[in-house]
Structures are given as structure tokens and as C-alpha cells.
Length: 399
Image 1 (cartoon, rainbow, N blue to C red):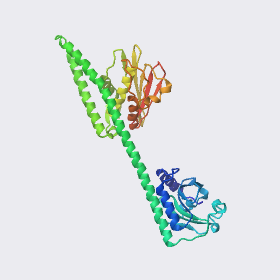
Image 2: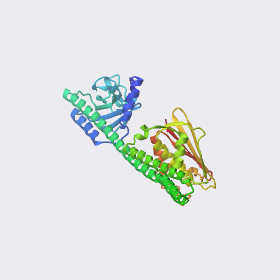
Image 3: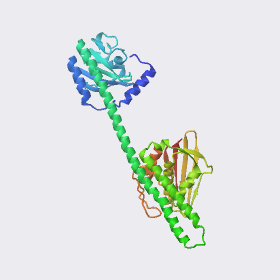
Image 4: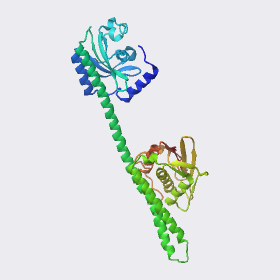
């Protein structure tokens, strides 16, 4: 059969794919239209076909069992490139295009064909609505016009179906987004306990120190209290802004020095005295969503601390970048994670069912939410680990 230009055909196939119609089941709306076309044109066979790069696939059929046809034997493929609003073949046995077609010469003995191309609003032919008979036939003007009208209805049904699928996806994305926000908020609420604990501990220490009027070091504790409180309020403000407009996660990026923000984050959590957190050698300038980055690092650091059973805990943060991504590694010398769990730990509500340093078990919220958060930042996260020897979490953030 003749072929359209490669560029046009590429775009046409993309249009066909956008409808998600190929290889779907029967649908009454389409079947009603084929029945109507058959009745009006007084033919035993009527089809609604979609044509891809290899076949003519039948979405709805009356009077024919064939579900698909190789494109080289397809009448509809000719209909789409005929540059006519309807292609009529009164006697296929006498038409050089179809005389040797196996559907004409074989048991089917197809003789009459009338097809209207299904052209979408962008001008791409998706397939055809056709009526077929095993004997020579002619259509009246009324039947021809009716077939064109029904073909327009088929295209309208395809558009409505496409929009319905898009709406379903939008609703699902919205539900996922709402669920993500809920989990993110739950994780953030959990993480807020860390700076709150810091405030509590310093307040208690301050109370004890104030009993010794000759000890002026209480001023440093007061400053620490004030700074932790200010940082906590700022984090809450950022979280509230994000909860109202999730798009801020990507759009609201600030220039920050990496080691500077890491020191702020470390100051927000309780780091035991037997732990050492090593920062990157170079204090690089980043443009990132600070609220997102804080949640990622807080989660990874607190996990590295909670599940470390060594006398001296060591956490090392490494960083590099290229033209498109920032790359981070958070390595610890803790218990490690068995390789069989490397993918599962990022699943919703999955836990290793082990107790941490404080004899508490995880909720399964943290890492799954972090993965979704990093995905929203167009990045990825993975883990490298050997049991007992610690773990390294590697994640990227798109610039």
C-alpha cells in the first residue's frame, strides 16, 4: 500500500497512542454506532477500525469475527490516505488495489466497501468507519451522508473517551498528591520532635545552670534555644506554604551553601556525643528547595543514628554535581540492610521490624515519603548496603 511521509506517520502514530484505545475491550457506545451504520447502509458487515504501524485493529464489529488485519491487507489504510471524505469500492474484484487481497479472493469474498476516515481535531487519520458487503453494491446519497455523520460520532466518542481517561488520571494524581502531602506532613510532624527535643534538653540544662549565678555559659544555651525555636517556626511556615501549594516544592528554590544548611539541619536533631557527622570537603553553592532538602537529610540522618549499634557512630555526607543534577551520599557505619530489602525499604508502610537505639520500631512512612519527595524533585534514590557494615543512601536532585 502507499505510505505517507515518515514525519507525518510518526505524528499520526503518536496521536493513535494518545487515545489508549488499541487492544481494549468491547464498548457499547461504539457497538451501537456500528449497528447503526450496518442498518442504514443495509450491509451485513460494519467496522470501526484503528490503524497502527503494523495492523488494522477492530474496535467494534458487526458481522465479522476478524479482530485485526495485517496493514498490507487493510482497506482502511487506503481509506486514510485517499484524501477523500469517503472511499467507496463498489466491486473489489475489479479494483487493482484489492483484486488480489486475500479477503477478496479467499473465503470472506469481500466485494463492496465504503469507508470514512476517522480524522481527529488535529487532522490525523486514526482509522475508519466502514461498511462491507459480499456482493456488488451502491450507496444512496442519504446513506453516504449518514455514514459520514456516524463517523463524526465515532471521533467524538474517541475524544470523550480520551478526556475521560485523562480526567481519571488527573483525579488519581490529585489523590496521590493529597496522600503524599498527608504522609509528608506526618513525617514532618515526626521530624519536628527532634528540634523540640533539643529545645527541651537545652531548657532543662539552662534551668540547672541558672542556679549557678557565677556560670555565664547560660547565655550560649539561651542563644541555642532561640535559634532552634526560630528555625522551627521557619520550617513550619515553609511546610504550611507547601501544603497550600505543592508546586512551590519545585518553583521556590533558594541559593544556599551546602555545608551551611547541613550544619543548620544537624543543629535541629539530637546527635549523640559518640557520633561524628562528616560534611563534604567543599562548601558548594546550591539552588534547591530548602524545605524539601531539610526533610530528606533529617530523615536520612536520624535513621543513620537510630539504627547504629557501633560504639563510635560515623556518618559521612558526600556531594558532587554535573550540568543537570546534584548528587548526594549519606553513609553510616550502622547495622546495614540486607540486600533483599534494598528495594522494599522504599515501599509504603514497609519496615524491617527491628528496634532502634531507643527500642522503638519504625512506622514505614519515612523512606517511602522521601522517595516520593525526591521523585517530585525529578531525582532518584537508592541504597547500597551490606548487613552489619553500614549503609549508603544515594540520591539526586535535578537542578
